[in-house]
Length: 130
Image 1: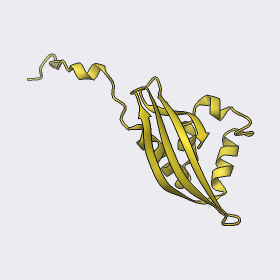
Image 2: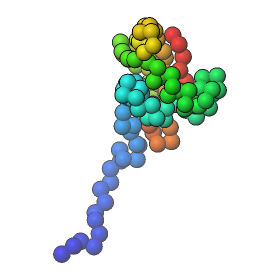
Image 3: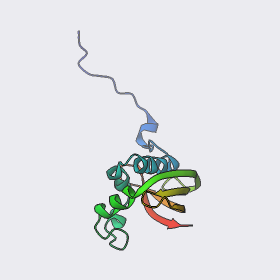
Image 4: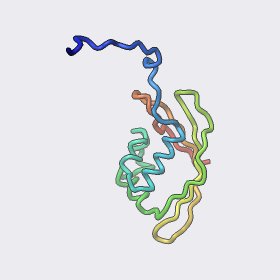
């Protein structure tokens, strides 16, 4: 016999949706996507305001993907959480880029400002050089 209704379990914690990954994991995923040439996934973590900023990406996604495809390797030295209030977070990342063309090393230290989106997932809202 099949029950006519499935009992509902009242779980008070289900009303507060938790983000599936932390701010530092979001930035780790961003770099993992860049390192594996999954530029679309990395691009999707950037807010529309940054994607549409012609001073950063004159040709939009094409500029973004061309820049990262010119990098031979990305080494992540450190990713650390600076602050997290549940809605906004700051993560710092220290990385080394080695360019394909001339093997030049570029050391990059950035602060990533993240906010939770409507789906309660962390998204990058701003990137600032340290």
